[in-house]
Image (cartoon, rainbow, N blue to C red):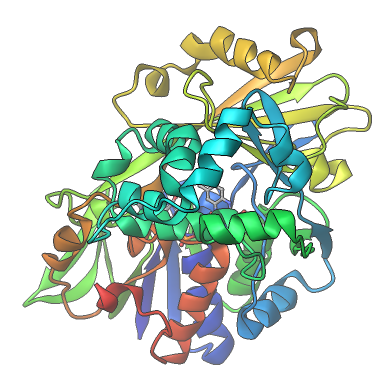
Amino acid sequence: MKTVIVGAGISGLTIAEGILSNDVKQEIVVIERENSPGGLARTFHKDGFDFDIGPHRFHTFNKDVDAYLQNILADCFVQISRKSSVHMAGKYRSWPLTMASVMGLPFPVIWKSFLDLFNKPDIKEIKSFSDFIRSRYGNNLYDFFFSGYTRKFTGISAEELHVDWAQAGVNRAVIDKRVKADSLGSLVKGILLPKPVETKFYYPSHGGIQTFCDKQCERIQAAGGKILLNTSVKELSVVNNTVNGIVLENGEIIKADKVYWSAPITVLYPECDLKFINTLIANVALKSEVPQNDYQWCYFGHSDLIFSRLTIPRHFRADCVPSGRDSVIAEITCNSETDFWKDPEIIRERLIHDLTSVGAIKEEDILFIDWQRIPETYPVYTLNYKDQLASIKLPEGLTLTGRSGSFWYNNMDHSIDQALSIVKGSKFKKDFWNER
Ligand SMILES: Cc1cc2nc3c(=O)[nH]c(=O)nc-3n(C[C@H](O)[C@H](O)[C@H](O)COP(=O)(O)OP(=O)(O)OC[C@H]3O[C@@H](n4cnc5c(N)ncnc54)[C@H](O)[C@@H]3O)c2cc1C
């Protein structure tokens, strides 16, 4: 039995590691386009600085996933309390919102949101992101934050986005389901009658988030599995509607009885109108610490600012930067046609201006800016994405998996959960693919 796994992200590696730890007789080949494993959970290293692809922290309430994380990381992890932030009306405010952070908002914003408590928009059928947010949080918060942030982030309007985008996005921002923030009423209750929840997450105790995937690779190779880096898969090899291998970009065919596909689904089915957005990452290394910001990551909704989120690696682990130094990671989402995707240097000055304007850096402190272009970071749930997915007919022997392969706006723990179910042959509790 020969199995090919396309993509050495968390999903593909968890499947490979899982199969090999059960049955060493299987021949496993993992094929990865990039020069290192990790996929979206990769880490870039430069001059003693570690830069993950934006903030990456492990958080799960699932016991199996938790046990798997601890098993792979062994003792090599630290537990950190979450400290995130949102930049609104020119100031940093703690997120989830607190009384102190809300009271600093302009009075009209507070007053109109208060009125929205009693004046919910009557939306009969919740179809779009806009419907969902306005019905849950009211028109005012929608106009004040969500609408602009979403357009900046996805490049399309909130009316054109499917309601699933809102549900997944809110869950991702809240992270901890003990925090009640799923409506304007629960937001207000959480502010007036706070029950602080300390959300802890895991982070590797050395290197960046990629340490997890590096450790998976060590196990896979020790068990006889092969990992081919710098190798891009072009398509499947299919006979009589059954997969019998994959075709590499250079034309070479690798035969396989079974293929697990965690690379973007759009590589296999380009004719579908499914869209991912890309993220241009600016890894900014600084000579000295930026003292005023204590968040790990912060969201920026204002359309004048080029980035949508900033991360401070030092607040994940102090030694992500050399002693006395600091760094900031800026995420700028875009599509492949955007001019700065092709040439990031054209926005260098604007980036420095925007970072300075929010007090994230001082220009004279910059040591270097390392640009990383990360394609296909977020599947975009347009209004018709479910129809597009439903039109795809999978051949026998192919399993789609993970964030990119399943077209799933998920987190690392979800990719692990799904991969563990695949390995066990059990039905995935949230069978994302078949639910559509
Ligand atoms: C900015 C950002 C921040 C995030 N923060 C968090 C967080 O804090 N916590 C969390 O849990 N999750 C977070 N996530 C989500 C998390 O990164 C993903 O859920 C997870 O890494 C997905 O893993 P995967 O293996 O399913 O997919 P991917 O990581 O996308 O793996 C797919 C792999 O396929 C490879 N590939 C692509 N095309 C080809 C080809 N043609 N041939 C061969 N290989 C190919 C890719 O290079 C990649 O390695 C974040 C994501 C982003 C973008």
